[in-house]
Image 1 (cartoon, rainbow, N blue to C red):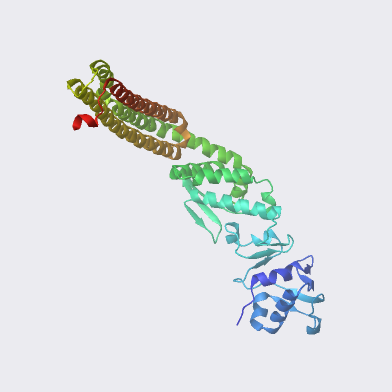
Image 2 (image 1 turned 120 degrees about the horizontal axis):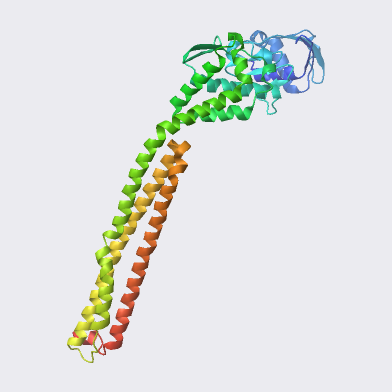
Length: 394
């Protein structure tokens, strides 16, 4: 048989006039869905027990648009939580650490799934985010007692005690800043250790029952000290290590980039020599004689030379692309893992990428110039050689 749900009870709570003590008085039945819920509660014993709703008016008053007297008490625990206000929501220890799955606060007129969020609920959710962040730095968190234990320079226990009125000054932006800092993957263990030490240092002289409230009022100080502590750690631990690794990588990449040109240097240096040969060795060939075959050999040789040089340059361009891709991966890794000091070294990688770009254009320019020379060679061949090529093979 169907069970009553908390979502069915929420419209009843919204349309009930509660007394000063949070006790129900009169309910106005605004639609058929609410009427069906009331009839279901009135007819089904399980629904009556689970809902905590007792209808005191006669059954004939259960009509849409009518009003009925009723008593509303807390529903079954597994169904949801009905509280007088948000302080009633956090009365349970667990709810100071984790928001209830389903609940309704009478004074705030707020249900857990409402789109419009009152300030008190927004502050409550912000402090839950803070508790979650601090829990990452705590050695142990007892949700049933709402206590966090921190280990560092000593041991400190912090009961998570607060009222909604204590949360008025909490800054959501500051909590988000601390959360982003702690949950960033790089050096997470070191960050949480620094945070734990600062929590202990900040709260050790406060009465145990006031420690969490003290953290709330000194949150900016806690965040600043934690970030400063990490910057000191990062600068001492990472700078020399990154500097050494970066310098080694830059030298390695520089050698690789230089090698892409050095490997074809002899072929490139042969281009001027080939140009001189082509320019000086062509003869006027009126017949299919020695001059004709010499001109043909020079033209074919120049073409083969440029073709092989183009293949070699294409291979070097592929090598430069591979080096450039690797440089980009190294830059991303440096920025992700060592964001604090990465900016000081990224300029070196940018210079290498500009050098790669320059080498690419030089190699492309050489290829273009060589093929222009090939076209010119065959043009000269045609101008100086009278017989048709096919006639000399007959």
